[in-house]
Length: 91
Image (cartoon, rainbow, N blue to C red):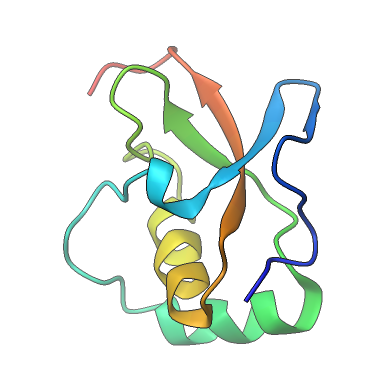
């Protein structure tokens, strides 16, 4: 299934569309809010980009929705995600 809000290769204002498997969630345990996030993504698509560390390709611990979005999109079978790579935070 394709994330209908994104087309791979798109980039604007630092936000990029990347394959979902090219980034990794911060935590290996599934967040409790994944079920609710799946409902949101099904209804409106992804409107908030994941904050991703450019060096490690992991979502940031400080990104409150990063892991929930990643796991929900993965469960929905999405191929791509909106991502903002940065180096502001150390892991």
